[in-house]
Amino acid sequence: MFNGMDPHWDLYLPALQETLYMVGWSIFLGTIIGIPLGVLLVITRPGHIFEQPVFYQITSTIINIIRSVPFIILLFALIPFTKLLIGTFIGVEGAIVPLVVYVAPYIARLMESALLEVDPGLIEAFQAMGATRRQIIFNVMLKESRPALVLSLTIAVIGLIDATAMAGIIGAGGLGNLAYRYGFQRWETLVMIITVIVLIVLVQLLQTAGNRIARSLRKD
Amino acid sequence: MYEDKHNRLQGGKALISVRNLEKVYGSGTNAVHAIKNANFEIEKGEIFGVIGFSGAGKSSLIRCINLLERPSSGEVVINGTDLTKLSSGELRKARRKIGMIFQHFNLLSSATVFDNVAAPLKLNKAPKEVIQRKVNELLEVVGLSKRAQAYPSQLSGGQKQRVAIARALANDPEILLCDEATSALDPQTTESILDLLLDINRKYNLTIMLITHEMHVVKKICDRVAVMEEGNIVEMGSVLEIFSSPRTATTKNFIRNIFDDQLPPGFLERVQHAPGSRIVRLTFIGESTGHPVLAELTEKFHLRPNILIGNITQIKETTFGYLVISLSGEATVLDEALEHVAERGIRAEVIHHV
Image (cartoon, rainbow over all chains, first blue to last red; front, side, top):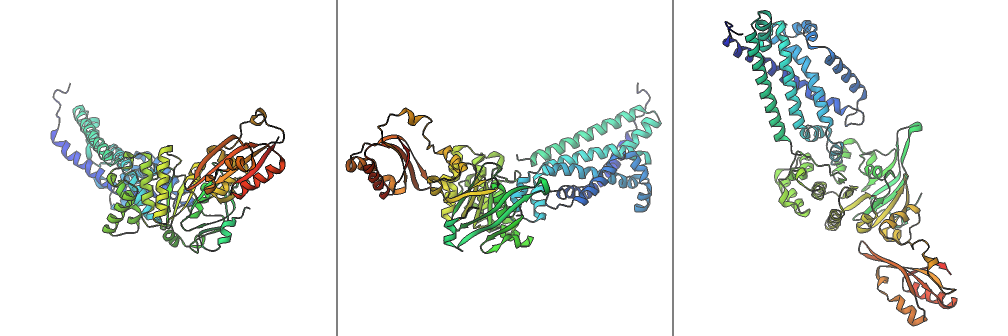
């Protein structure tokens, strides 16, 4: 059925590089924003070590709002913001801003649920030892939830790969863009299938790596 | 409420003084009065127990000592400093001298035994050599030197509690708070943990406050005990006093769980007694357990005591026991005989006249 179809072997490596570039920057920036945000979402809860009910409610609501907007809408809605921030809204760089806005609250929520798993008794034990809040966050909460944090970031990375495919529509490049242009716009099914296979392999590799790292960190 | 005579007489030497302590959770109609006007003192080197059923307020009470729970009112004075008046930085410093262990151990699952014990030292940024020396010394004390590189998940419950004890001792505390520390352990492990607590109490002259719902724990290691019920300290005194003359129904209940001193129902009716005989309860404490008092009753007063029921137990280092006997004879002879028994340091109470 693929008779006469050109697999375009030269397209995949640059597309993969573009995808990894976008995912890499977005996960990096998203983590820098998302982890502290996730920590804040936990410690400002009522009854926790830095109780700030108003801050918690507001932050939580904003995150919910961003999380409820479909990525494709976010992509277009953020065009003015992206343009203001980095001067352009197209291409790989243009895609990173909406990708970060998309993934940071997602990471924050994943962190939040991972950090909530930390036994309150353990936090209490460290309070009884005279630990500062900072020490409790770093020496107890983040340290204890490392396996869950790695798994959360793995989920976020895979979510980002999915999102970069959509970002392809605004000309962001990457594997998603390749599948869209060749597979959908030009009916070159073979390219689409190969792209999907590359994506499957990529996701498998990432998930396996994430699981391995998490397992090596897990001591209970 | 109940005043602690023992400590009032000693006056001023207490390491811990709790004064007019109140703890109320919530407000308005939903308010729960967890601690009602608690007053007590604990001396240096003492093991002080608080016993009560769940919900009695004992957990809130022990958490108020290091301010994990902030009292609604009242003072918690340790070494002359009222912790409730300290800034958060000063409080953190004060807490370093108060170790605490918990029912569920609360160890870092992601850290080795060594690193768990080292945790409080690392918080204080102690030098590496100090940490190395101190942790090894403490692991020696709790008997876990060989498991230094194990993770908590590889240890039994008793071993986990030993790690927690070593961790609690890392900053050379003056006080150790034990929050139901043996409640998650089986009886044998409980024994070994209690032995360890006694051991470190003597070795470091460490003051221990513990809360428990098991009278057995109190009996084995405590010097004094407070009984709590619905937020009130209803009874307080040396463990021997409490055992020999419990006043409240709750205390009697706790004692009965481990030391049955009740005659079976209907027992007195079934036993045949000569008219005029008396059922007497003799309580022996410490040295008096060594007197051959029954033989004396026979030889001196020509009475023939009939033993109905008896029991003996160990309260910390002191032997404590009782006998219920029936005695028959002339009233004057019986009075004289009981007076003689009392002179021997044995408490005699007539619990039944036939």
